[in-house]
Length: 278
Ligand SMILES: Nc1ncnc2c1ncn2[C@@H]1O[C@H](COP(=O)(O)OP(=O)(O)OP(=O)(O)O)[C@@H](O)[C@H]1O
Ligand SMILES: [Mg+2]
Image (cartoon, rainbow, N blue to C red; front, side, top):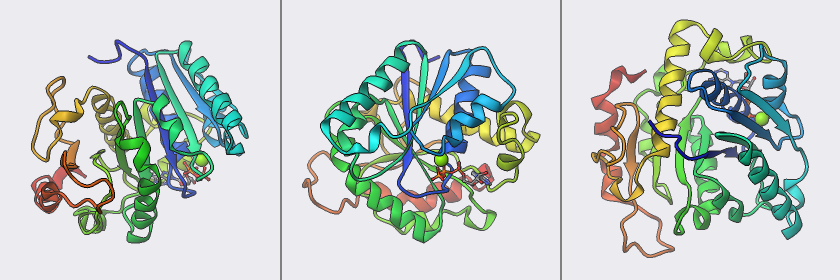
């Protein structure tokens, strides 16, 4: 379907432990193993959690990882320049590039324009959502300008009692986003760490849900932003039932307004319409 051009994905959040590395490594494995795409994971984290997963897990010929810790956190033009060229170099040798970065304000939103998609894993606890919203405010310039990457919020470590997304529906988000299918809390992410990947070795139910997540990310790449609305279907790809657009910024909203769009009112009904998606 898509992937006729290179796909560059950033997985980030400033908060620790939200699943950046787990999602990066396993999403990379999906593109390599199931989509037969030459895939590279570029890990900017000093702990190198995601690249270590790829390096030590059962190998796959289309999947490799690079660890490039420390380049990006210099907070100056040189480190931004170096990071960009690292990302572009890696992307030039692959069909799919996935970059794992722990966000920090010194990085600055300019780096975002290297990417097609920005994935932000977040739990659905109110505390973590507020932190994610803070991050979105910081990234707003980079996410709303012309040619900006598409933003996908990725609920992770979700508990069954959170399935109505009430905490999310109660929030106001400063930028439009796509919502990925939720990834439930599961020990599988620890069980397979550095051994194998969810997509290949996960227990069937977890594997199935994770595949659904990966497919939604793949579809997000072919989403046409102007067609986004709560009920709209993208022109270039059929929408998965799993991926919904919850929020749309109107064309004429003042740049500094706390954005509240009509679509946000529809969140509870959208979620209620698909209780079985867990
Ligand atoms: N869906 C999930 N269910 C259960 N545990 C998970 C899930 N996703 C991640 N974890 C676990 O949460 C912990 C943190 O995950 P991970 O290292 O991927 O997060 P991170 O955002 O990259 O953290 P850091 O900021 O330290 O880099 C790990 O122990 C991982 O196994
Ligand atoms: Mg990490």
